[in-house]
Image 1: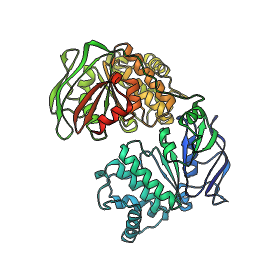
Image 2: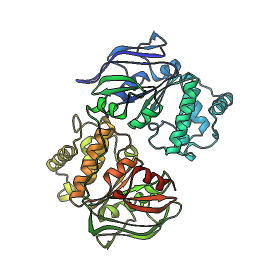
Image 3: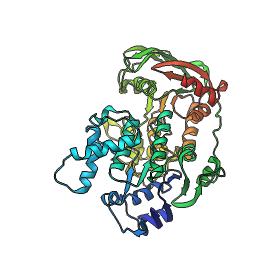
Length: 493
C-alpha cells in the first residue's frame, strides 16, 4: 500500500472538518475525489501533504506509520501537491521553478544548478513534450505552466502527486493532452489524487472515486460501467442534478446594452452586439478567443481602442472602472482570488466593499448600523454559508467566496452584470444557487453577459449565445435552436 489514512479526524475549534476518515492509495492509480465545497476533501489532502496535522488518526506510507510531518518531509516520502494556483514563481525561469523547491528542501546553502539540468531534460524527454527551460515562466500559457508544476513534482521524486482542480483554465485539447501525460506516468507507477468538480473528468481518467460529504466519507467506488455521473451526484448531494432550462425574462423591445464596432489591438476586433433588458447573453469560444478581453473592455479595466458602448440608448463611458460602474456595469472576474476578493479582509468587508459610498453619511463617516445590516442581508439572500461575518473571506469555501463576489456587486444594483466563468472550481450545489440568483435578477430587469466553457451551463441559462473566435463574433444563436453538439461544432469552426 503506497498510502493509507486511518480514522483521520480534524477539528478546528468546535467544528469537525473530517470525521474518522479512511482513505488509501496504491501505486499506479489515479484516484478521484468528489464532494461539494467545504466537504473536507481539501483538508484531507493538506494533511497528506504535511501542510496540516490531523487531530487524531494515523497516516501510513509504504505500510510504515508516519507521525506528524512537514511539507518538506512529505516531499522526502514521495508526496507532492499541485495547488490550483500552481504555486510557481512567474518572475523566474522554467528551470529555476523546477529545481528550487528541491534545493530548499535539502537545506543546501550552495546551489549548482547545472547538475540538475540533465535530470530535468530526461523527465521532459520521457514525457514526450517540448519545454524551453530558459524561458520565463510568465511567458508560458497556463497549460505549459501546469506541466512545469508536474515536472517539478517528478523531479522531487514524487510517487504520489495531488492535483487540485488541474483543468480549471485549460482548453479541451489541453485537457486531453494532460490526461495523456497522467496515463503515461500512471503506467510507470506514479499515482495521482485528482480533485475536481467536473464529474465527467472523474469518469474519464480515474480508476476509483471517493465521495465526501460534510466531513464524512460517503464511499469509495470503482470506476466501471456501474458508476454513473448521476450516482456520484447522488452520493454527494443525496439527489441527481440535471441542467434545467430556465425561463426567459428577456424584453426584446428594450435594448439595455449596445456594443458598436468595439476593437482593441491584439485582443478583439469589430465587436457589435446587443443585450436586452432581463436577458442572459452567453459568450462561448475557446480560450484566447477574446471573451475575457471583451469583458474587461466593457468594465473599463482594459479599455477598447475604438468603437462605442451605449446603455439605455445613451453613450456610456467605459474608459475606466469607475466610469463603467457609474454607467451601470459590474464585473465578476474569472480569477476570484486575485481580482474579486480582498483575502486579508473579513467576509463582511468583502460583501460591502462596493457599497461604502452609499453607506457613508456626512463627512464620509460610515453608518455602522446600515453597514452591518447590509452585509447580513446580502449573505442571507445568496445563501452564503459562514461562521462569523468577522472571519477572513479566505475561511470560506470556493463556492461561498464566489457568492460573496456576486453579492458585493448586486448590492449596488447594476444594470448589467458580466459573469466571467462564474462557476469555475465550485460544486454543483453552489452552481445551482448562483444560477437561481442570476434568473431572479433577470426577472427584475437586470441584464447579464455570461461567459463560460461549460456548454450545458450556457444552454441552460442563456437566451442567446454569441460565439467568439480569433477576436471576432462568428455567430449569435438563440439557445432554443441549439444542442450541445451543434454549439460545439460552431465553436470548433
